[in-house]
Image (cartoon, rainbow over all chains, first blue to last red; front, side, top):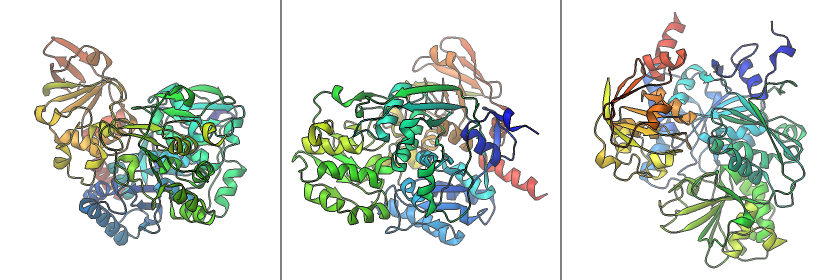
Length: 426
Length: 166
């Protein structure tokens, strides 16, 4: 029996130990972890289904613990995409798996927390790299590939190497327009795209305690952009409030041990942090907005699993209200889910967007991955609240994507070049 | 024993470079292979020969979880990928589908684009035939070796379920 004192486990390891049926786990150890929820989407599910069918079991281990969401190329952009979604829909029907049809669907990482499908203390695996988003709720959530998901659908567990944990502490009180996006871009700019390779990032400190859940989702979402296996927050009153009306099953809140072992600890003072911009072609190529120079733009995208939540749209509306999108700019705003869309309607944010000259779309990942709904031509530049700005990510290999917060995106849509929200809305 | 010519790349080759998302509306590996490395090396598909080897520096395969990336690489005829480090989801995906990966910093530092390598997966030996230099890759942990021996996760899972039933 290992005493509580001797465990010294960070939050991620606490959850993994319990799910592996062990007293404790050490970084580097291979475990079979029981999973609470498995996720796949219209790009990754078809391969997962094909591989599942090779295993030789007729039923999934538990249809209640699997969710499939068509969100990347939906509403179906072409015949091939429609065929993929059809295959996924039919598999879900046959197996009794939860499936969100167009009209109910949202971007998976916006939708699942809203639906109360992911809860604190869960182990969640998804065939999508941004599955790490759910760490905002104190869950251990990590992205994998289709074959991993196929095996887990058959067995209910998955092999994992226990990651070391990096503790990140954010001190200070950030300025008016600073949100989770700026904190995480600043962090990735500092540690690099492999700065947390194979590790869990545990977000701590007064500045993140002060953040809304929406902003925490943004931060956990981009942990993978630093190479991390997971990004995780401790559960507090805000988390409890968020899940109170949503949870339909019991859950358990875990805490890191007071003397937990971290591979390293990184501290930031975010008091004077400026809005951050990740320049092409890396999420780690980050500069404060005042240092990006004169960059004219052709398109703005506000949305995605990173920044498609209500707070993001509220910030954008605050800046766009009573103003007009620059005639040289196409501004595309995509609420992350039907719930976000409806809330934005009720709060009259949609009217603000349409009046400002922005196009508003039904939920979809769409342009973020160069799928549809806003593809870039050669030589075009886009300012986006999304998560990746790799070469060709949003269209032509000769286009450019600049990653920013919703505040910088909205301000830039008005001015036609990348600017601080202060320059527009003071 | 694997033998092939090296296609060498730098750091942080992302999965959008390996297979851009616009080609992900299909999942057939042969179809995907037609666009392999399109984002970083448009001539790759023309140049690649069966058995060839992809080599890169750090964090190869970063970005999305798309298994289409290792599937495209494997179906294009590549016999193995050698890098200093791999992004974690890509690493899992490749092992799971039976695309061999080797981590070897020295081999990467001492090999140029176009060199001919001979690789023994069992021992992790990498022989650069062009430069007559020999390197040894980082050995796999025991569990990973089992997965590889089973030729991927699906076969491993089948074996596991069969044992469970007994």
